[in-house]
Length: 523
Image (cartoon, rainbow, N blue to C red; front, top):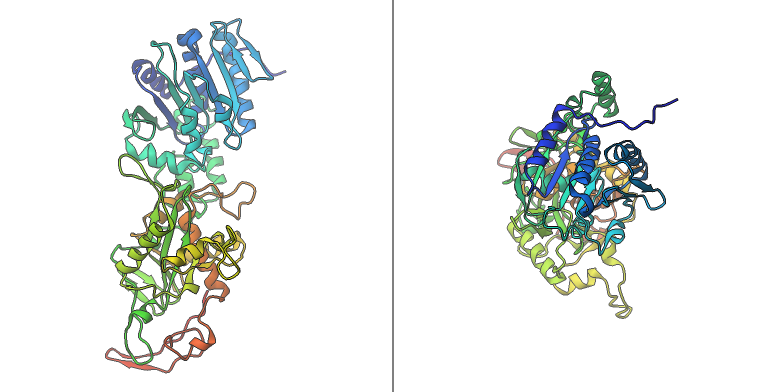
């Protein structure tokens, strides 16, 4: 029979160090235990709950939140082992998931599902919020709303927010951007994101947990579960937050293979008279876009390479795609940092069109020269929002058109197929096969792609709550080009745009010799 008798937690050296920091710095508002798996973070969280329950007395009104019910049940069992030992006489009301402590303090366990945690605590004065696996929350707004209830009438109690987090969760992008990159680990700093409060994040790995019976075997199991993805191993085993090849795109995404310098320019191609014009430059360009105000709005300028070329040490094969530039509209933090998964609610259609126009102009286009059939946005822009008459339906695309910018809705296609195409191109970057390259100017792609993760229910698709707005814009273009429905019509092929998919062109002579243009099919 299993031993169910209460046991006092024995802290490891790492856990004692963190506990000492919490005990010595009373004004500390936020503590995030952010590291790899198996480091003892959840056990330390349970110890801290007991510690604050003892010192806060009747002023303790705390909640313990976790998104998944199975994880919350495990924490519930751990509390059953600790609280009766620390505070005999405490009672647990299982139906309410609430502890009534012997010193009149209160602790509730909340299963946070579908963003409803705030509804369960709204209007209450919370002295402490304990959050296990903070990285499961893809939207930080949920966390901020819960924190808005942190207040107490006891001047001797400082409200605390204490959480655990692992890299690579749905919310790892905002934990990294708002916390991890703002200060070194173990160093207290003023966190603007959490209301300019004193905060600290602390890293741990499985090697900080001496109570693992066989740490070497556990590490082998962790590495095996990563399927050889070195960046995922670095995140889960070593607790690293800075790996750019982790997440949904795995080892397909590589700075060494795919990143192009900021000064990359769209190649010029001639028309059949040998002239280089703005229209021929735009002929192989596409625009992918994703509209939003609650979520970010963005457009990505892309071009397809028609002749092999070298950029630095990178070989770009014919037929490759390059994300040249972008316009990304999102919220801005007080320190000027971009909030990659939160939109700008003040954004309007004319403002967005004006920003897109600036994107065109800084890349050498003085007009809306890229044909609207190759300006691909989320199909929601063509959804009818109201009735303005048969010839003038009320849609976002017609709203954009009022200000001179015409767009086309993205084609119907499986998301998973589009992502697989994008993965293949990223993997082929730098080889003799067509690849996908991304300029340094596309900051949102480099900032968000590493933090897009697989959907647990459909691993072939991306988690829809991930910061996928720029990735969606690229996918729309690749999907449209792959379907071949957005090329120029037959009536245009004898007109002003001679370089199109069709017959092989005759050799043309240039000062550098004779070259043959063999038009590439859209891949």
